[in-house]
Length: 319
Image: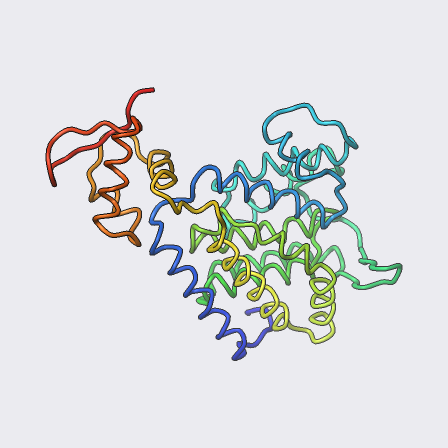
């Protein structure tokens, strides 16, 4: 049986808007984003996801840890960041439909921070916000069954990943299957479900927008608890995703100049290539613009060329 929620007109409008933005991104870049953009968004994801949970390290300190530099700070906070780095380094190895994979991810995320990481809780818990009891999670002896049902939904539902990911995120938060790390796992697994259908989500930072709307995030979770369904949370998270895609589309990190396009292309392609290969990545530029990029690359010593006219073959010049 599917978890309770309704498909509203607002949900349909947001799914349409998100799908249009994904199409725009895919029409410009058939390949994965540049290493620089991926690194920037990974730093933002780790920093903001942990900041939501009270981690005190700065963006600069998180960057330092990613670059294997020595960083001073609370040992618990450093351990949280190191665990998150290891977790996101393995992102593509996790299976969003596998409960075993889910538990392995929690084991990495919470290693050295709690007893028995990667195991469901063995006691009843309540969640407090502002000194008040905000949520009483289901009894611990129901957790295994509830999580099993939730993964069955992820495997078998015909709903698009955009909706399934939001439903999983809310339901997992409601079940609260772990002693600690539930928020981090809910956000991670939503991204994993999204990435299973749209690869662009591997390189985005939804967490930064959740952090900015943190009070509303918890308020919507609480309201859904009262209503007994996740409809409001689906609307809220789809709006977050829509805004995150808008931000991605306007990021200055996307190649805009000929030199930036060449740098991006050469990070993706080894060996020789033609103008047609170049245009297959940058479908939003004209053939004349592509030719200017390549000729400029040769003139600046970035590329070397052989052949003539439309038979010209390019390769990276040896430094």
